[in-house]
Length: 365
Image (cartoon, rainbow, N blue to C red):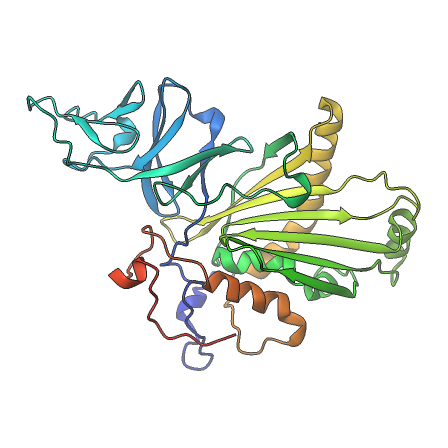
């Protein structure tokens, strides 16, 4: 049954209002994916919706990708149907031209262009075969790198984007909720948690413990992979999550020959108020066959858990009213999300909030 959990049980099961966490009207400053790099050819432009904001992205003759607000500031025509000239975009309607910083450089009906007219431009980065856009002209940090892969040459593949009904802040909690491994997936693990929130833009959570041996399947896994198991999650700006699994496992408890598996998840909302999740599978570049095998194995390990978790998040009405000490990773994550700054892409915020000066009441977690 399809329900709208945000509009139900408000009197009998009230929920706190947060600064950023679980709010559809707030888009935190961070990197949001705008499509595959291969889908944007040199000299071409596309109109895209990124986390509810309409943009034009285009690739100039140099091969660089640029992003501007998607509506022409003259009469509001979609610049995505315009044409690319060198490193500029020209509106299809009246041929107003804008450079890659959004400055209007040519208005054909005027002898001189009006340099005071400017369209908002945005920072762009190409990484993991994707185009990423930051909701400011300059970004203070780059797209998330998984710590174990930092500085390495990588192979990657992007899976199909899928939807969730709940906010992506809720979906992201899945990786740091060790309780559900036993209750939903029947994987019985007693895990310790180490949380590193020292970096301003991200939070890193390591979960590790004894490999379980309650079921026959778990005993086989323990014999195969050894007595210890760990995985880690690194979140950036509450819109990117890096997952590393099979950390420190040893074949038959002796040989460190089993590679760790790495996944990156991109999150954003669409204009219909749904969460969009794009999985990206990563591995250290070795050779074609090895990389292909490891990327396939990474995808299979994700799909193994995805279906059951999907049932959980279809109609969830997330609440923090009765969190337990074992939920500390979730509590820390919520506090981290609330420390982020809303961007100009946020909806229905007053001027102070848009500048990051938050003045709403909040229930602490």
